[in-house]
Amino acid sequence: MPRSSVTVPFALALALVAGLTACGGDGVHGKPGAAGVGDPYFPKMGNGGYDVTHYGLTLSYDPRDKRLTGTAEITARALEDLSAFRLDLLGLDVSDVTVEGRGARWNRAGQELTVRPHDDLDKGETFSTRVRYSGIPRTITDADSSKEGWLRTADGALALGEPTGSMAWFPGDHHPSDKASYDVRITVPKGLQAVSNGELTSESTTGGRTTYAWHTAEPMASYVATLAIGRYDVTRSTAKNGLPVYTAVDPTQKQASGKVLGKIPEIMDWAEYNFGPYPFSSTGAIVDRADDAGYALETQTRPVFPGAPDTRTLVHELAHQWFGDSVTPRSWRDMWLNEGFATYAEWLWQEDHDGDSAEEIFNALYEGDYYEPVDSSEIWAFPPADPPGAAQISDPPVYYRGAMVLHKIRQLVGDDTFYDIVQGWAATRRHANADTAGFTAYVEKAAPDKDFSGIWKNWLYGKGKPSHP
Image (cartoon, rainbow, N blue to C red; front, top):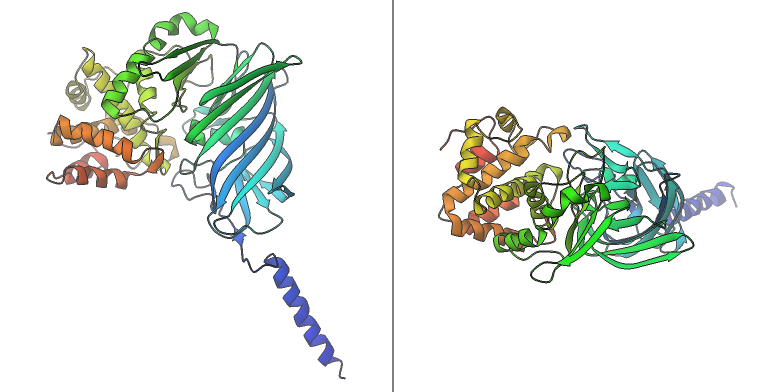
């Protein structure tokens, strides 16, 4: 038999075996999931190819050595055939990764943790990933110079996530378009408390360390997940409808915060009347001393304040529970759907509590006479639905001009239809994601006899100061 008649079939056989090995040997031709979901301002945030349904975080932290130790159990569903997928995790040292209980290969590149399962994942398959990690979590400085991630406080730490900070303390799909339920177990030295989102399901102390278990059943975007560690005065109460209210206040802020936080039941009753049923199973607040955080944040069920809040700020952050936390933006370009609604809630609160009417506030802003500590010219720097970059997603046009868009809708349709729109929008997008195009379509369908084109063109997307009226 000639030599070539043996080597050619043998080479073909080797190639066939190699091809079967590359695709898992079972006919699945998976590919790596995308790094990032293509957000216009944060293209590396989030990941393609899967949807997270649950995070189970088991954490331990001691403020003395500033070291965080964690295990993340992530349950997800594959949206395509996957040979690999990515998680967002900045800093921290990964020691072990498993997928479906089997060791997985992994590597790090910047904020991307790439995981290669032992076997390809089929489209539609639900799978679990466990990541063990530890280290000293980072504080992240945003494009707008604000700080987030893991912020150390005088007696502990505070984790804040908007827009990219959550990847500093746990691995995940860190984009608002992917929401999930959470269980957070955190162990701290005895004498400290640990407060997170949702409901406290257990608290136990052993060997000089206390473990707190928190459960969030409703879907939550990771940027509104929080963890506060320190010494707090905790108050438990209920709103008029029996809704549990849990507040944790740094003792130095207790006296200044008490009167305002005592209004939470009243504010929640008012908000439900205006915005519809509250979308979560508890509410409250965290007031801490966080020198690096010069802002309040609408962390789900339990907004965070870096000091004693005033009533308007509390109203703003509680309104976010409907607009931002339950109805969550599909991308960071849709930020005005969060901040415009929450800012307009402030105006409505003032209108209903012997303050200026929303119309008076609108006119004062337009004329440059508003008393807010903001240069009125900044409001017209760009359209609220199209910030020029990541550094501007929390700038005045997103808040104030966003609220002005809502007031223009109210002027056009009248109060009855306006509140139908507000409540209907919160109800139809409850626990889901939404974008600006979806909102404008919803408004037009709710009032088909009205022409909104001028509002969209001039107030929502137009450059410069629109003519008025």
